[in-house]
Length: 383
Image 1 (cartoon, rainbow, N blue to C red):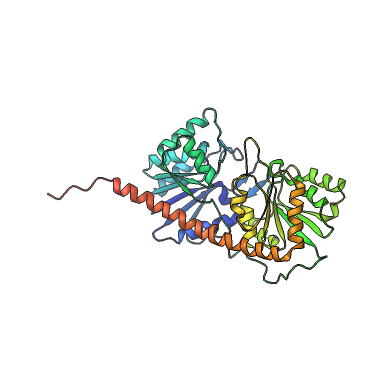
Image 2: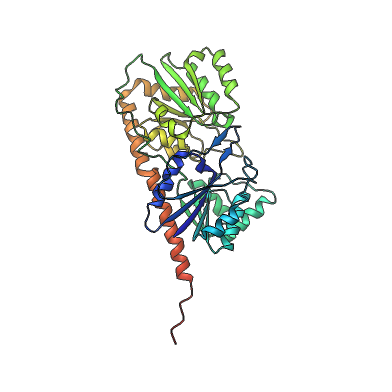
């Protein structure tokens, strides 16, 4: 089978490990399409990282309206499809986005089977033309990848009649995300490192981290990895609360360098806040940290409790004191800490590795081709 997969998320090098695993599946000829960079909504520019490129073709092509989540598209996609002639087109975008409409329309032109992805776990109505894009995709794509359970429920509520496959977009890579083999049990008085990896935005709840830090012992430190509009506010807040010397900002790092920083952490914090137009949809940094043997202290927003499973502690969103108490429990109860660290890695290895996600995706592709072959008319008997 010849598969064309399209995603702006492929600018991150660690995402390529799923592509390598998918390309290993029997009979797969994989071609991946991605832009040379993506302008994120937090103002950062993520350039393409070329890291894991074995076994598949990576096509880097310009993106029009880069940074515009709903209306970006690929001007050269028609010529790419005309050359590749794929059996399957997997567009890793929401059905109401123009890029998805473009990919599915071209897939039909070249006789390919389309499948789209969705994270949207809130029921929302979209104005024209996005509603029309959405309806077109629902009508012409018989398969959809729901990256969380609630997203699948939203698809059904909005009238999608096709098959929905519950598969995460990306997971952790055990060859990259593994525990520090030299880490020894925590000793009282040593620095206890609390980490955050992601956008520094209001809906991510990052000010709560500074609030919680001010309630915790002097040994607790916070490391922020990421970029966003709240950076200056967080620095001022840390100064005001007297914890500035216990806070470090590393900025945005290449995706393949983040695991080394995760291994230095004792706990990953994920204090996301639900908003009318957004709630946490998966939390990939949680999966990666947990695979490193780092337990998570996360809020109960969206998919966080599902992703964390038994590998961390959950607190009511917006409650900095409750978050601080969860951290204090892990700081003071090393038996609990060690158990959660072990369970965190086991949970990810069982459910959220790149290899497991690639295998599930491959099984969907096989199902799509089997349906096409079953629907094809039988050949006429020889005269």
